[in-house]
Image (cartoon, rainbow, N blue to C red; front, side, top):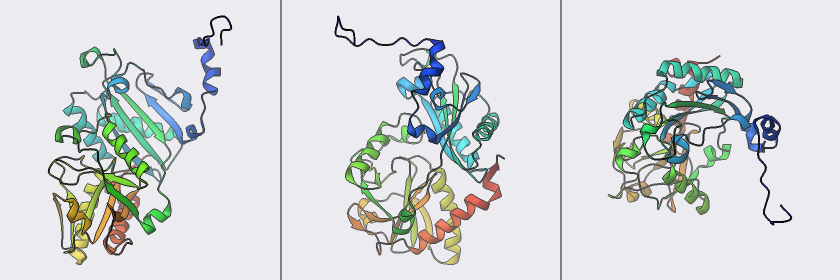
Length: 331
């Protein structure tokens, strides 16, 4: 504090001061950040204080970017090609040109994981419009940029799989269809839904569209088993095409063949239909599947994980660990 003016004296940090200064920026949660590739620097860093994005990148001040998150399990990337296909689709929809072909992006991801030296990790991949100005004009950005961040892969507590999770209907409206199908970095509605869940003491919230049909959660999809034994998922018109829920719907065909399910369909699902479900479940990249035992104050089924959840979860875990068609080796 300046004794004469009473104002706080702000330090000017020079380039030669940064290495020393960055050490003081270290936080406990930085232990979960392992490595980052930046096309701005054309290199990989392992110091969390150096995992930065230019403040004039449109991703920072406009959310003008697309992203994907996928996991590496036991040294293999799971379902990565579908994630990269969705990345390209999202980028095409908002006219962001990928800075590299998807094959080269995959190699950058692999090398960043190798530098992180983690066989089990989560990959967060961002493609931004790039730096170049602070207005909404996308043409002020001369070049799109790629950022790849390798972080810890954290699963929910085991009891969430064994005892189930609680879900409620969100007051945050569903996104318009065009934006719902793009995995962009403009995730304010998703953030508000997560805040709503935490504040309400539930695990997830699920949005509604104008017709009263259930949509998606913050970063997850849901499904329900009707009393007639039909596994139902919301249509993708107003929600993101989740890679995990798509794969689960394919695997569920085995349960139809075995007689545990009557059918697997994508359709509109009302709140009332969900409340009367025999089973409900959540699907997401990190946790794979979780059983829903309470929806909007109503106990689902017996209030415990059901047979369909247990069998489909078993099939999905087998797929994650052993299906060579969906695994891309890193190490």
